[in-house]
Structures are given as structure tokens and as C-alpha cells.
Length: 448
Image 1: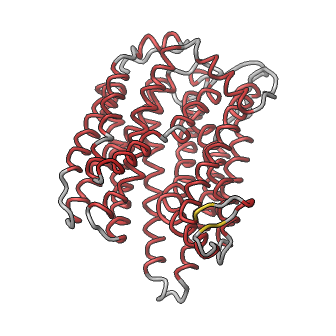
Image 2: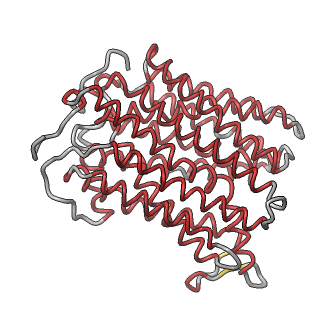
């Protein structure tokens, strides 16, 4: 393969592509443990407790001399990590496309995140600043790495295989998250029998996610291949590169239309994920063990859901399957509104509904977007997609909070999120995906 050419899936042998695809799955297997064990379960409550131990008499910590309520420190750290990611992703994405050297950039992002996560073992006492700094680095690195990882999809899978390949990647990730979370929960709940403190058990769980991430990232880094392309390395600052990417996307309005629909319904998905535990604890009066068990159930069923929806997409097309999942999300939220308090069994039924549609909605959205990306701009466009996935999901939590503030009811707050799925459904129905794919310069699959 000579410099100045871009290899497509049609140029590669099926065996080589299969090897790359199997390696690609393992990056989801590697990094999803961070999302599950660190972000979703352990780090938020633990970092908050560390910040509270360092707080003054009024409950404030003072990073860089700024008064911050200890209970808000974790949320602010997550927000700062999003800002860092928004600055870095377009720059890295453009550089990856113009040089064709995605793998070194993926390695740098993955091992930066894995190292920061492993270093969370040293987060004890009142070291809240260390925890915040490690969270910012790990979360931003995870976003950058996922952008690069996603951008491989149109290069390693021909159009007719992308729904299945994307779904298997999500399934691998949820499977790993479930496996490690089970081990973590055994250690956490039985820490006394292991002769360690609760704090030490949590720090081991956090660090183990980083070690897992780093160890299994070796597999995709060995199997994925760079596709060379000509062009200079991007040198624009982050916001200028983001503006340049958006200007280029305006030349493909149907791609932007899909991204808008995705931004809306994904905001609803991310809000349900982040607020379901609050709904369970505050409105339904459920204990921590029930909530953690529900999270584990979501992870397990998301594997089956992703694979099942991938098969449905082969029959009905990705767009119709996603639309069906948005109907299922709406029905799940409606059912959640009527859940009786103090009934964990019904909450597990709700968690099962979420799990079955969660993985498939995300996997098929990723594969459908991959058809709408102009050739040679995969990483740059997926930086915008990743920001929609991770950096723009703020309206849902705001609506949830405002609804609760105005009504005093978490039931009203949870049902208010139905609007995201209804509006996302309407916007997606208006996107002619076949024409969008042709206008992006890609072949249209037989069923899309």
C-alpha cells in the first residue's frame, strides 16, 4: 500500500478484515470497565467522600482558591473533563485523518486514560485534588480514544456488515463491564472477610479498571492497521478545528440532520442512565444494593439487546430498528412512571427494559452514522459524534432537575424525558438515509 492512497474494505482480504474486526471488539472490552465500575458505580460517591473529608466547616473545598461545595466537586470535575475533550477531539480527529496514523494516537489516548485510572489507587485521605485531576485526564482520554476507535468502523467493515460489527463491539463492552463489576462487588461487599477496609476495596476496584483497560488495549493495537493518506498534520487550536469541522459538515446537511436527531434522543438515553438510580432511591425508596444489582442487570441484558437489535437491523434496516427502540424507550419510561414504591422486583423489570434497548440503540446509531461520513474524514466526523454522545448531554439532566424543582415529584421528572424520544423519533423519520449516504459519497447498502 503506497503513500497517498486510502484503502477501503473492498481492497482488503476478508480474513484480514475479520482479524481487524475481532481486534476492534476488544477495545470496547478493554475500556467499558472504566465506564461501568469507575464512572457509574464507585468514583462518584468515593470522590465526594474524599472531598467532604477535606472540606471546611461550611462544607466547601477550595481548588485553586475557588470555593466549591464538596458534594458538587465530582460533577464539576466531569464537566471540566468534557471541556478538555471538546478542545482536544477535533484536533486529534483531523490529525488522524490527514496523517492516516490513528493507531499511535489511539494508543496514546488509551494508555493516558488507563494510567490515570490505575493511579486512582492513591486516592485516599483528603486528596480530592488528585482525584479530580485523575478524573479529568481519564475521562477526556476515554472520549478521545473512543472517537478514534469509532472512526475505524467504516474502514474495517463493508457497509452490509457494519450494523452487526458495531453491535458486537457494544456487546463485548457490556460483557466486560458485567464481568468486572461482579468481581468488584464481591470484593466491595466482602472487604472485611478479605482483611481490607472499605476504602481500600474501592481503590482496588478503581485501579483494577485501569489495569484491565491497559492490558486488553494491547489486542486492538496489535490487530488494527493504519490506512495512510496524504495531507498535512492539523495545527489549528481546538475550537478553531471544531469550527472548521462544523463548516465542513454543513456541506452535508443530511449528515447534520441525523446528528441532530441523535443528539436529541441520546440526551434522553444518557439522562435515563444517570438519573435512574436517583429515581430508584429517592422516589421508590430502594437501597444501594438493589440499585447496584439493577446496574448489573442492565449491563448483562445490554449484551443480548445489542446482538438482537443487530440481527433485527439485517431484516428491517438500522433506521427502522432505531425508531423501534425509541418507541420501546418511551414505553419503558411510561411504565417507570407507574412503578410502586418499595417494590424492587418492578424496578428490576424496568432495568431489564432499559438494558434490552440500551446497547442496540447505541450500536446501531454508531453504525448508521458511519455510512454518513465522507471517506477520509472518519476521525474528524466521529469527533463531532463523540461530542454529541458525551459532551452535549446536558439538556436532559437540566429538564429533569427543573421538573423536580417545579413539581416536587421525581415521577413527573422521569416522564418529562419522554419528549426527547418523541422529538428524536420525529427528527430521525425526516432523514432520508439512502440519499444522505449517497451525498456523503458512500455506497448505499441493500437494507438501511
